[in-house]
Image 1: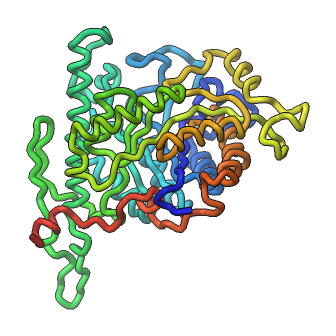
Image 2 (image 1 turned 30 degrees about the vertical axis):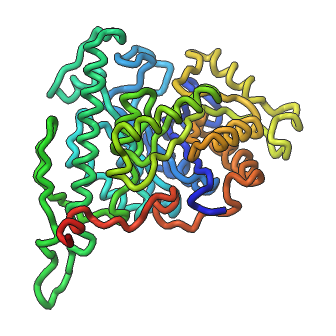
Image 3 (image 1 turned 90 degrees about the vertical axis):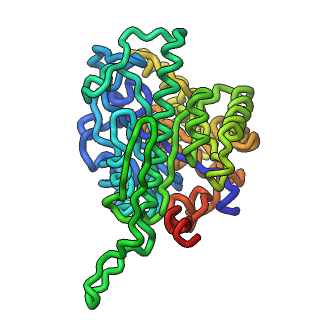
Length: 418
């Protein structure tokens, strides 16, 4: 199977899992959530299961059941480690899987993001990505203290729509600055010649001189050009404005169709956004679209049928979901929730692939239960159906693994050559 046409599969990591009660399961490791060992184990399990990449959730405020405000719950996981630092810790202990941490651009300078992701690309030897996140939460703004957002948010207010547009325009400029900083060193800028006493060729380190509405950044970066040149940029998008951000600046976009009809409509909307921003003029490849799915899988207990039918003691995913829902807040999501057998989930993934999706990003309901079932039950089924290769891809970079162009020269090198 060609690495440029096959389905790709990612896993989104969020604490103990995407179900609010995931941490209460016997298999979960709530005491380990803030330890490096937990994250190393989880990412290694995904890599062993031939998952192509993991994304790591992050934000600048405590998790909340409210979209724009903190809550007062004490029966759910609250608190995080920094996603970029988790990825950097995991990177030397993995060898193939892509690492895509989240970084919020609304309150983080693009210069800082650029060197952090470039460093991750070095520590992972070319497997770094970055999920761009925008924040309009007042509590996040108060943590930084340099801007304010309204506390009484009316989604129907034109002022809210204007704020959203501004935040995503700012994010697009932030990504542009980051991309330019990654290009500010040419690939061969470091000479390291002891005899001539020259470590650096100054002519190959460039000021980016970005002047925009939101940022004025001179450059260059303090970190040499990343091994991939341009690490992979991803974004989660639910509507026209974020689709346009992804079309302007991202390599991957994660979307949240609830059914087949929505999946078709979203693809059309993303392609329309690409045309609107004239993506073909600035980026070489069409945007890769991944569908997000929240998944809870049947406990097969080794049953080859891919469901719980072979063992009366095995718990069906639907029963497990009902049991977890009864423990506190029921699971709700922006993405489609599927609780069932590996075969049922494989059917949904096959349908998405047939529609033209580049892949899926799976959000495990309970990481310690559902990630092993993704690896042991779902991935083999997808391999049997020809949607995934029978063995690990031989690509050495995340760009290569995703079929994105590799070896792209610095824009400044190309300008000088001209």
